[in-house]
Image (cartoon, rainbow, N blue to C red):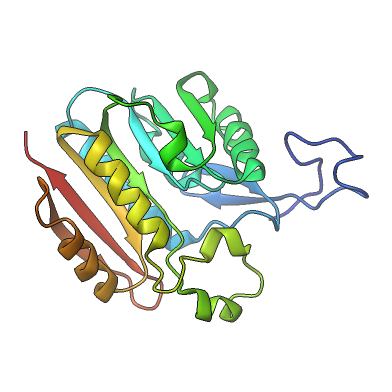
Length: 224
């Protein structure tokens, strides 16, 4: 379904003529977004469900979502739990939608949104019990295949791994002992590359789940 309303965090002068804001069902939630933000994909509810299932065995502490877009994956992951959520995205529009979608879901009081690059918005020593990462993973040369998607949300650099690597660095620095992460990628080949990059750290690939042409999900574990 869709509706027309003013985009969050804007004024009519900032968006001449207004902007069409769509509202999509995502699991039990309703998520607002517009064409400047990556459209929620139904298949990614699997990432939310997997992350949610990991919460009971995760250590104490908040959940972190990297490259959160409109916030839908992280919000659904913590929905029905008592966990707080920190969402990070480089797009100010995406950050504004995450805030409004958290309020829409009745979770505004336990969701913190940070706008900026991952490396700039996480403080040294911060630890998170569970991390959800949804980085852009499309190789730059292939982004033209997706003309309706915002370039910032899908362009993963020459090999599709530039932002993935930034997320991995954040995981090494900020995932709590005994914690886990659920990382979204495009292919099993990229998942193999992640495993190679994590050699020499205490993070390991615990499980890979494939979703056909949509992408893959990888669970990463840190020993207690």
